[in-house]
Amino acid sequence: MRPLIELRQVCKHYRRGGQSVPVLHALDLEIQAGDFLALMGPSGSGKTTLLNLIGGLDRASSGSVIVDGQALEPLSSGQLANWRARNVGFVFQFYNLLPVLSAARNVELPLLLTGLNSAQRARHVAAALAVVGLADRARHRPTELSGGQAQRVAIARALVADPTLLVCDEPTGDLDRKTADEVLTLLQELNREHGKTIIMVTHDPKAAEFATHRLHLDKGQLVGVEHQGP
Amino acid sequence: MKYLPLLWAALWRRKPRTIFTGLSIAVSFLLFGLLNAFNQALNSGVELSGSDRLITTGKYSLTQLLPYGHYQQILNIEGVSRATHASWFGGVYQTERNFFPQFVTDVQTYLALYPELVLPAEQREALRLNRSGAVVARTLADRFGWSVGDRVPIRATIWPQKDNGNAWEFDLVGIFDTRNPRERGQYEMMLLPYTYFDEARRFGRGMVGWFVSEIESGADAVAVGRAVDEQFANSPFPTRSQTEKAFNQAFLKQLGDIGFIISSIMGAVLFTLLLLTGNTMMQSVRERIPELAVLKTLGFAGHQLLALVLAESVTLCLLSAAIGIGLTGLLIPLLVPHLPGGFAGMTLGPQAWLQGLGIASGLALLVGVPPALRAQRLDIVQALGGH
Ligand SMILES: Nc1ncnc2c1ncn2[C@@H]1O[C@H](COP(=O)(O)OP(=O)(O)O)[C@@H](O)[C@H]1O
Ligand SMILES: [Mg+2]
Image (spheres, protein in one colour):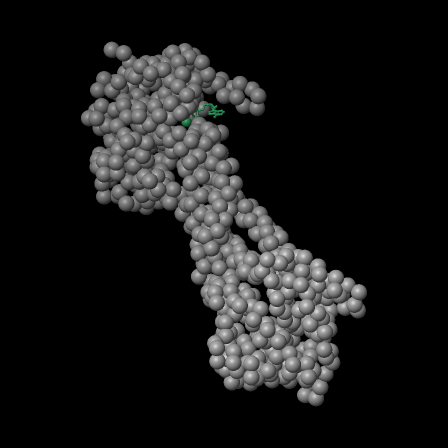
């Protein structure tokens, strides 16, 4: 079977003060549909950079990123935005909810880019909030939610447009152990029961245990893949 | 439409700042509305007055007096059908704040020359019998509670009496109105009887301020005016004749170029507003960079963020400006009774609304485009990563 995500000889370097700073070195990687991958490694090793390439937020300096048969390099930035809206859900360390909008309005945001009418949008929002167990918090502002609740609202927002792929950058980095475990359990559930492919950056080995696969990155190079059959 | 909550929330992100900016815009456009209505009132005087009347003044100055004897000679000039004369009385009723113009004239011929002023028939008759009677505009009579038969005391500032100092009294024999209510402000005045005045004044007897002549239909007003001026060219009191319209325009020009003053004030106000609103919009976008980056991450395209920020700017500017101009509309009827008569023509027409909202749209684009472009070009990775 063809992998959901293929990286071929992907290099990434940033320009800083006229100098080119290499971050990723000729990465080759395949991720199967249905995987829950934990991307680990020390700070500055390039985890976020790699995640941004896979999520279509950034472009490789060379090489190619292919997701679900679609090579991302030839897409214009408008096409790429469109592609993200349909295929990827994003979860960040600091939730990145819009503080002026209620939980429900935050979750609704990705649906504004679809052709759904407001009744349909409301139904999808309610379903997504129910999946993360926050149906009763729909009208709350982000400031009225705990960290764990805010992150679950963010996960609902990532889910609501039903993307194949979820990318999460240290989703539990700002949470205590117990809340973190709840969020990780939720991700695991999404992977097992809803079939979402998940790539999660973490440097917490306990968090990584929730994943089906672990990948280590060091100084921009992959240093080992661990499997743990589900 | 579905973006409305997003737009609204963004606008109210910092309530005090939005309210402060909105208020500044509203107050500026309130000022714009008032100045506009003010200008309208001044210009309406120019537009309404007929060009079939000729005003003859002293050649070198409006304040130079002319001998009454010119009157008969003007009447004899070819093309002049009727004429009257007038002088500035410049008196005060009770207090300076009650200012309104009083003209000393031959009231009957004056009214004949201004058919736009109407006096009830019986008052017309009373005026014919009582040559020392005065008439006053309906608006003034209402304002001061005068009625026909009253004796109105006026304190002179220019013309003392021979024996009685500055205290004049006039019999009110008529109250006139304008045929067209819109012209009321232009004719808010009192007409005082010349013969009575001339006999009683201490100095200046036999002199008048200016002449008004009616031109026969078909005659060329400018040519008749030239004929009048030629008649007196070699007398000790040479004249200058202009159509009433030209005269009023020249008079307003003497007050200063009102249009220019208004444009200058509005220019300064708009410039300040531009900086203020521009700063608000810039700040608002700057502090939302991470949020805008999140929207972009979720798949919002650059042009959608551009439109969102522009819509914010347009909503803020247009709503506030509309509130300001709307307040002007409410304010004018309250203000007019407290202003001198010349302001009675103050109105806020559709043209003022159009112009005001046009300016507000221009403002919205000027202050909206730079931050909107910034939002459009936003680099997600940099904005989220903080590098
Ligand atoms: N936008 C950027 N501009 C310049 N350098 C960057 C940028 N993003 C990341 N880097 C650099 O690339 C390296 C890897 O960053 P990152 O992928 O964020 O690492 P990690 O997520 O593993 O901590 C770091 O040295 C970082 O300083
Ligand atoms: Mg990182």
